[in-house]
Amino acid sequence: MAVLDEALGGGTIRPSILEAIRARHEGRRLSRLIAVALLLFAQGLVHLGQAPGHFDEYAPFGVLFLLAGTAQIGCAWATLARPQGRLFLGAAVGTVGLIATWFWSRLSGLPVGPHAGYPEVPGMLDMVTTLSEIVTVVLLLFLVRAPRKPKRRGPVRVTLAALPSLIFVIPLLVFGLQAPFHPMPDAFDPAGVQAGQAATSITTLQAPAGSQPVRAFTLTAAPVNVAGHQGWAFNGSVPGPEIRVTEGDRVKVTLLNHLPESTSIHWHGLRLPNPSDGVAGVTQDAVRPGQSYVYEFIAQDPGTYWYHTHQATLSQLGRGLYGAITILPKAGIKEQHDYSVVIHTAVGSSDARINGSANARLEARPGETVRLRLVNAAVPDPFGGTPLNPVLLGVPYRVVALDGHDVNRPQEIGPQKIRLGMGQRADLVFTMPPSGQVVLTGLKGAAQSPFDFSSTGPASLTLGEGPAPEKPARLQNFDITTYGEPAAEALTAATHYDVTRTLQLAGVPIFRNGTFDFSDTFDGKASPFVPPVTVHEGDLVKLRLVNRSQKFHPIHIHGHVFTVLSRNGVPLSGSPIHQDAVLLPAGETWEVAFKADNPGIWMLHCHVLGHAWAGMVMTVNYDGYTTPFRMGTSSGNEPE
Ligand code: C2O
Ligand code: CU
Image (cartoon, rainbow, N blue to C red; front, side):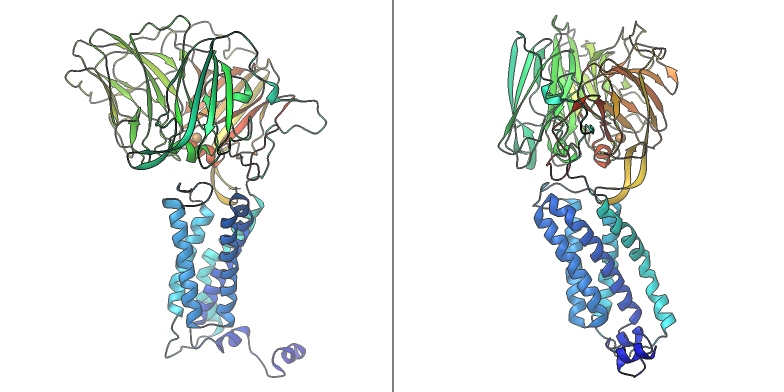
């Protein structure tokens, strides 16, 4: 002890570190100095921990995090070693700058960086950090002026008064220090094949040569201005142009990228060769600005489908990169009018639009037959995922197809809510009534209320001329599990399945992509760490989807079609149902099946874009296939 005393003060007794600081603090409250120092130190560590990940993403952001972190730790030290008014004022101004940058990035999006102009999603760690910064600014402002009549407090009281800062300091240290060890992988192999194992690259799985009629299209992705808002679009319109082809056509679509960032096109619901599936980091590299990619497939299953970007999907699809693709049957369709009806979100707001308009109009005269191909491409609340509930008023109608696949003997129904999860489609067929007008409306809302637009501004579609149809006081929900009539079906509950997998859908708190937050997960794991469903070509596969969360999850498979087997253990009593996305309400269990007849690496994910972004993404991997593509920061591929 004597040795230490000597080293510290040349023989004079120094009672404590507190006294040493007190000697310089000009009467400022010691507890505040300590609290500020702890807070700044913890915030500094959080920022330093995030710096490497941000360097990968966009170097200037990395520099910003490095500077912020270093400055905060420097200020923490100076707070105790050199407390003075100028320091506290400077630290307060700097911290206000960080807080403002955070709000800017989360509310409207920073003007620079890989997702310029698009708001980032707030996470738990950055929210707690910002909250602690606000508290720090208040404390710093108290410290700017030294009080005239300093109060003296004993070490115990000083320590107790500084303790509340630990409410922030402890979580920041615990989560902030772990976060950098869970960054987004920089080059994740979605095939996960062990070295040395014989394997075929998915790039060999091209559409076979043949003499089908070729239909060629070009889709140019570029920024667009829609009613004063900056959006991104294919061929200058939101939604992009409808692609209409006939069953059996050889479809070739050239994607030209004139956007400032990489992109891709996924053909939602189509069974096509894996390299044309459009998933960045799984089936191709995202197409860089100025470059192009050709998608080629044979239009197999007639029906209503859509296409959309599958790179940074949450941000890119929300800006407008989607459109409808319709495959007509060889025999043609019987209806006199055949309209594709894309329900989507306005560019720059969460209001609903139909084919680009809030009050869409289409032509049809009394007695004419009409087919409406509804596509839910809307992202009003990317994290809630409430389905749309369009209602057709003024005419009895039949729901003739779901997700493009025919319903067997669909009966006529009155106004009902056709619940559509994100990505799902429904074809409605009717004959225009003598009164002359039919309206499609009511796009989002709770199960009971008849017309609830909640956060989504209303949009409607009016067909024909005449008096507006009446709105019933109460509406039933359309039920796909009892609609239509049974028919022979290859896959049933009684079929023997080669692969059976249960997937629990749940929100759990986990570390992911450098932050800690509640994530939407499969079996408690988030992409890319959810073990794939591994299949062999020819396998019959059954999935038990168990929704343990309080949200809707439309679970979508690429390159295959689900046969719905049962809902909450009850087999379907109506028509067989084939969908590429099944909508799971909170608490329900659905069993679906598919035949593994299309080799490759295929996405299986929730189509609520915020849930997919948060991690509810996995793949179906055919044994023996590899992919040369990687997802993650350094690969430039972010499939969600
Ligand atoms: Cu419509 Cu993987 O998506
Ligand atoms: Cu979901």
